[in-house]
Image 1 (cartoon, rainbow, N blue to C red):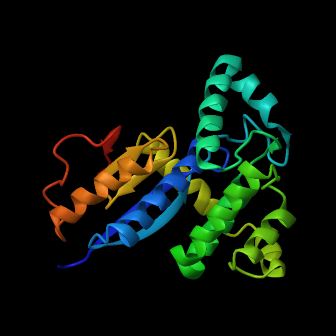
Image 2: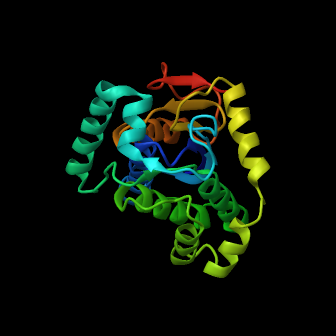
Length: 242
């Protein structure tokens, strides 16, 4: 049986708890489909940046308490619902996501993750993405801090701490990260995570691994050809990208 290459493009932002949830669920689904189901699929994953909070909402290099930020910008009721849902998921999965720490701009983290992809594709980018999410969502660390990011770059095998500091102190990939976010918004994307499959179908929100597994099963049945669509109807919260 021929193996189908599935290209997954994930738009994400580190300030987004649902993006962290979605990252865990997507990677679990990919691992399950490859190692347990042994579907004839090969996955190529690329994460693209999306900045939910621009500098008009949170000025560059400023830092505010996460809880205070959410209470101010989305209100007590919405924040309570969001934190309850995230806490329930975190307890079920045994992953200590919390809203402690500071809210700060994510452009440096995005730049570093784009650099990782340029250096070594998903083999470099995914470990760094996981390290950044863990630092921010589980440990409450400030991922706008150059030294924090440099430590994560080194520990995840992206590059040495000194090389990471040199990169982060430059403006390399800054324009590119902003352009990627602007392009996504120009296509009508206003929220993340958004997982685009083979450049044709998109699944929005932090979906469960079961949702992705069902999609991947259909892709495997459809074979190596991407047309016609393997979906009998709309994918959960899906939109046509192209």
